[in-house]
Image (cartoon, rainbow, N blue to C red):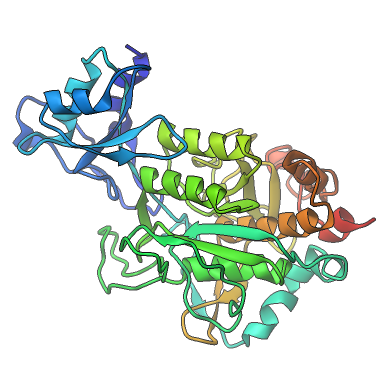
Length: 413
């Protein structure tokens, strides 16, 4: 039996969704009634189970009266329903004692880090046509880079809250994505008017995916966006759903995946999905999180992901931005202008989600210029041409990655 099976029970003791809604520690007791609710976004209906090699997951589940709901693509995990009348924690306790089980994890919750980590969107008065020529986009050399490449033929998967109809995205949204919230093939971002995560904010994630997609296109105007809705309007989702979306995006031919979501604790199902995507030549560009501390959130902290944090107009780390040795690159992330709900609407928003979007767009430019290159080589080029940030951030030298992206230098012949 792997030690991680037993340690999984400790995971819920400290997990809270990165959107900031706290939750009581989960304590295993003999009285199911005394167990607190799992953290926001955690499924109370199923557990992720990894059988030992050669073991039959159907047989394992049947012995406890559970049902196998399906596999999580790109990982060794299966979703297994919690039997009626049994709590999730007690079910996991049984799994931990079963020699046929290699691992059992709760399907923990995660969120877009802009839930309350940095800012909420503020209505913009500028036209959507101003998005690609805003100062922070021009400051990273996008105007010169777009004369050499536009991201034509490159598919960028945006795994987020879905997207909304918007003039800036018209003609750029690729069919084939999926809405994991509603369970249909239309990944449309929808507000429900409810405070689903109990943080005092209503629909704080609404428009997040649309905003992210518009910043990808601000850098790479001819790229194609493949949207997946894995987060609800309060930006809450589950690890297994996002893992499934990563696998689906890879299957559909995405060249790069933008993952502007985060959580404070690691979960193996998402680790395995990111690792599998990279093995297939598809990099996940992930936002570092908005803790404002030396604490890069998961999955951005993974060595298999490409981690991006935020700097301001003076090349100083944004106050909200997470930092640390896991960071690969930095990009502007303060008061960016992007597409927002309504056909022509814009807003200003801050957060590492949007810095990641700029880097995903940058990758699209380089992929178009050199379609036969290895993904690692393209990302290394972004790092090698980055503007160093140690002089403007002396107290956290080497903790903002290789520096701020410079698309002019990166795309130069």
